[in-house]
Length: 605
Image: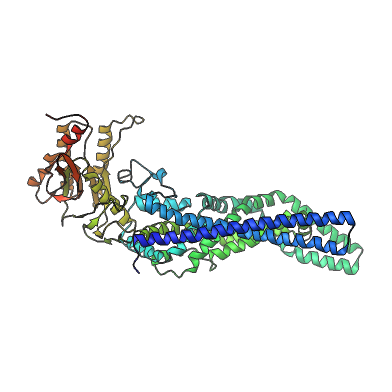
């Protein structure tokens, strides 16, 4: 069955209802466990009070043990149920976030504001980063690397082969969309920098902390000490006398050796065991990526160096967990004393950790990065799933841009107006004239932002779209800067220079200009715009040029094969303005400045 936006929202709501019922049930179960624990505690007090009051009898002692055992079982069950509740709440949040994003545009993930860069060729003008931006709409990443990868995908176009392979990978992930919600729920409570911290520990801290385990003599002694200890114990039992003294001397030596290396051991244990616990939390997400039989080459390529040891990363994490679990024996003072006196337990665990690090740290780091790579692809797969009416564009080798029913992806569907647009067979500067608020700027952004989506391998907000790969440059929101002592006109000149330098060296440039040279007088504005358009024509650079200046539309007469005119107009009925936001051929004939001025009490004479 073909999915629609309505059916997708219904599915999400059904998931929310199911999860909410599960959450309510688990909370009720936790309350029951808490009351049961309280009842057992009171029962134990009563039994102990009875023993104190009437004396000890064997059946009372038996009764005293039963509540304790039941209490321990309930504690274990409570931990299990609490974990289930925590996960259910995270999954509920994931589903609720999708409903919020589709209905209100609010997304609980990061909006990428810190990636904003006024100097970027198009990021600021096309609303790529920041609140209510394309990044804010798409992002489903929680790790720092995932956030970086998504930003890079939107800030720099990929090549044709990579775009096609990413489209295939995203399509395959859509087929596993239910699993991706669970993938995201696993990561929901993790801070973005946690993987980076673990990576730093594995690459920088742990090798230095484990350096003391490289001593061959130490390794050799730790390896033979269990056999030596058991042998001496057997001899002591058989021979007695001096053999017991030798056995005790060996134990004292082991204790002294452990004490001498205690500072090194503590650095290893306290410096990394917390990281290992975090790794265990990521094991489930890594295992899912390993268990699916992926078909797309792009996803397969994410594994090319991940399992160079032949052991899945999730299993390597389990190996680490077993080492740390054995290391945790030192938390019990009596157990730790016995194990270290007779088996050098802490040193053995340190050496085991060192061997694991040598064998698995590189592939583990790659596996952790793969989580972030999947996050970025899942973000785009979620976008694809949530918008079944969007389509993957066709990337053309030559010079082309053709779009049917293209709309702005950040405008609500019920308010979005779509247009058809295509470039000529040869490069042209397309001048778009029109009234204030008629849709010129939005149209330029519509073309640009859909190009960004296309070059990231994502679907576009269009019925059909085919295009070649362009390097987009925009000139729209030019701002002055008091800090940099830059006026609006100077900022405009800086932007123009950046574009001119680029189109002189980058043959596949595509330029979006919205009302050029606003910071100067109308004559210089017209002449400067005219010269700039002529430069674009000379360089053979395609461009969309939005302007209120009708004189510029007259350039078509002198450059019939190089300049085309389009416009957005208004309809005026009984003194009221109506906009249809539809792109039309030719220069604009109707303007609305006089009407807008009249609304605020100013009349043009």
